[in-house]
Image 1 (cartoon, rainbow, N blue to C red):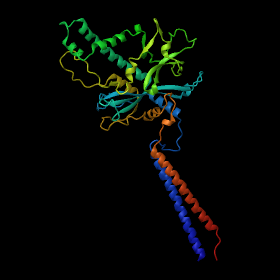
Image 2: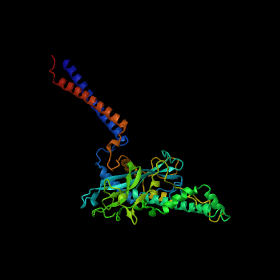
Image 3: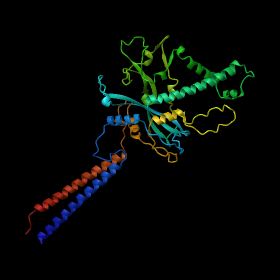
Image 4: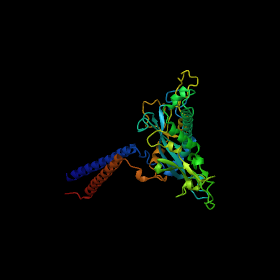
Length: 411
């Protein structure tokens, strides 16, 4: 009877041990599945690791090949993009240092290359101030963004100055005569002639007043007229991010790609014209990164009815600036409302944009800004405590079984 009881006891302990092992395996499988399902976790723990540099370089190459174009928002058959209900909103300027790959690491020993990007949004026309619902987020290189937006600003300025000059002539040169055109008078009623005329004159006479247009340095170019004070060292000027990405300015660089910043050097100290030192005018560039407003509406402004027949009932068209930037950009359209008539939301740039947002102003990844999920952290802690406790219980049970097997039989 004693032997039978001991055998029964040993069998019971073995069954409990097996059940605890199965419970532990089930627990690990369940927690592993839950962790893999969390946002930001890797679904395949055995997948090869990808560094930030190689991932960034790979994605940059993908952007260069061009993003696919979305079909018409309004369901058109011509394949053109209809963005007329949206406006462009500047979000951030950021430059990122990446591994140069096979083309880098040349004679100058530079294994990192600098990529400059603009993150912008397409916001509903009535929500430029907040833009927190039904928006798309996009990534484009700095030069493309500046070329498209400053061209838009220049065209807008030219149209404004043309109207302003006509209104000025009408107000001050015609002495209110009968030759005034009624339509022009209506156009001038909402214009502060004295203010706009002074602004337009400053733009027209910019160089005579000792200024250069900063938008002329969007593309990286050598500083030639630098008064021979550089001791034979070549310097270059180009656009760069400033004020932690909230602004854009022209900087001085030591390489022809404007990749290596010349620290503590001011571009205006190196600009010289026929009349001596020159300064930069940011009257165009400052218009492409407004703090709380949109840069431009994607609804093409209606052309004037040249025939005066009142027939302006043309289909709405997307402005060229929006077409250009949309087609060139990497896209993250996960925040578009379901009511938007998109036939396909493109998300190819979401991960890269998220990575750029946690980069420092010097282009290096800032780990302190990569905030982890509180839910995931809490789950990991709970899992760790439960795992240790369960492992200890299994060890104790296993020890009891082994001790029972070693104990001598009772008479």
